[in-house]
Image 1 (cartoon, rainbow, N blue to C red):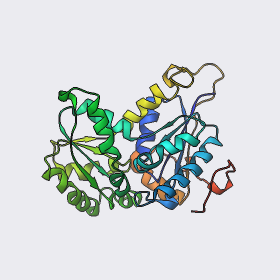
Image 2: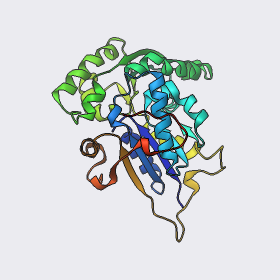
Image 3: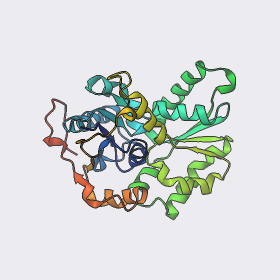
Image 4: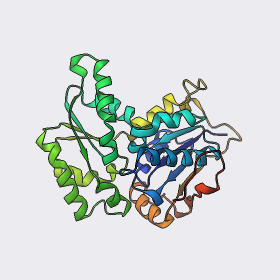
Amino acid sequence: MQPKIGMFDSGVGGLTVARAVRERLPQSSLIYFGDTARAPYGCRSKEELMVFGQEIIGFLISRQVDVVVVACNTSSAHVLEELREVCSVPVIGMIDAAIALAGRCAPGKRVGVLATEATVASGAFERRAMQWNEERPEAERLVWTVSQACPRFVPLVEAGLSDSAEALAAARAYGEAILRTKTEAVILGCTHYPFLRGALRACLGPDVLLLDPADEVAKFVAHGAFGGVRGLRFEDREIGQGAEPPNVRYYVSGSTDLFWQAGRVLMGEGFARELVRQGQLNDVDVGMVRIQP
């Protein structure tokens, strides 16, 4: 059996992480859950995020995943540690990977983040940046400049409007804070935002570095998920004779057609409609709190 990676997000945004994981770990199987019926998460309370996370992790564990990736910055910012406490497999979030990427690519530079309202309100990025700075010499520290909430971004991506005039207008509005503070590197602090890279680049210009943590998270999965738990890295596992081929499935709580249409923009023609299925959270009995979408 090949290892199974479980992953969830409020919708299609986490596919940016799924793609990076598939590229780095092509031999692994992937079970993805997009909670499209309750998206966006950026305006949800911590209590709601915890319930949603428990439900979805229960769904993933019922399918025997070996590790869970919380491919949602909002959930990572608010309930990652709590989810780790109730999960029987390793749980990897987005924030640490994002700051590690910024520290490697923009040491000593002015760094900011574009994120959801809930993520910005949590202060998670700033706290982790401060921890990063405390552990490093002055020349390698990050100069934090701005945390900009972008409430219009996720609905645009979920609606398949990443390349629309509306997306460009929203990027221009949110980008003002980046330009005003002379920020040199911007963390895309929501997994939906890489869909908007074209609009952001048009508004911010060629000199602002856009940091997408997706591949950094994939590295964390490859090198960290099993290192401290089973003493084995994913990359150390080889497909031998008789091994099952990698299996990829995408589940959503809302419309499968809308998810497939938006996801195909990122994943390409190989993102087949038959890979997307309806995920029924209320059918999972794992002793966790459950509510209806």
